[in-house]
Length: 426
Image 1 (cartoon, rainbow, N blue to C red):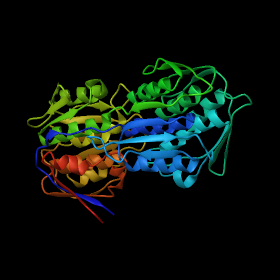
Image 2: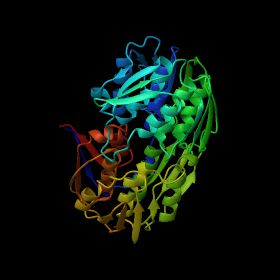
Image 3: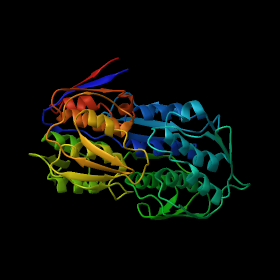
Image 4: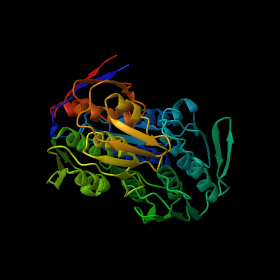
């Protein structure tokens, strides 16, 4: 099993190319199930989750072609065509590997009138139930049962119907699933209390190009007027704001300076705000965003929240940064109930963190110490890398397959900017 070895203390300085967003690419690629015409997708990151999704799409009968040459940032161009679907079943063996696989439910149901999808798996950061997906599809007329660990869904005769779906809580996945189902439904469908993330806006752009009419993407209320047949499209995946935010914090925790090309400040709003309050200098450049830190940072309180609030996917990275800041910060996790699993590992490196319920009290220390640590999930794993970049001595991060789910060539990108970091095959 591969590990990452880091010898801390080197400032991160340079330019780091940002790839396409994993959290956008997954639903965008799944949208190929809505049409028999080809979708050409550029700026797709090379990640373990993308490979898992491709295996799932191929199991349905999707033809997947990848351009032989990577883009300048290392991402790929894919052409997906679902003109011959051989199965509307998404098996447990594939779905258990990645939670986003459940998003095939809405497209399969809308296009073929039926779907059998395993209950999903993914990172162990909370229960993240799919009940919001199922309740929303039922509002559109679907009949849904759970049997032997599978979701069995059938559309009414004549297809899904129009109506209003009000989500009792904000859910990015449920919003995406309902958006795709609605895009292939000849009726007006209103989604209220919808997610507003940039990845939602990116999906709306693709579905609009394919022929659906979508109003209000990026707001809490969307009106979708679908069609009975959607077209193919060319689309470029939005840059990954979580990857960009992670490298911004790598510069901050090491007292370095990085430029993040292709990323607009609008994607990083709450993260930039927190960094500036901590004493980090953030500015715009011709190519994107520049981040510079000099000296010890100040403690900042953070509450995670749906977009445009501080993203839960940046909470672990922020905690690593605050573990080295001057003063005491309070970090409150409001999205997932089990997302502090990195705390014991940071404590092994000398961090002073006390957890009570969904709140962590972080008392900053001047210097962390290198130690062997174990990754527990995707974002927790990268927080340990950030801590290792700062720490005195050597840090070994184990179980880095979590990192491969969401960060492309992370060790190489950091090494190119001065980090003493290497991947050790195991």
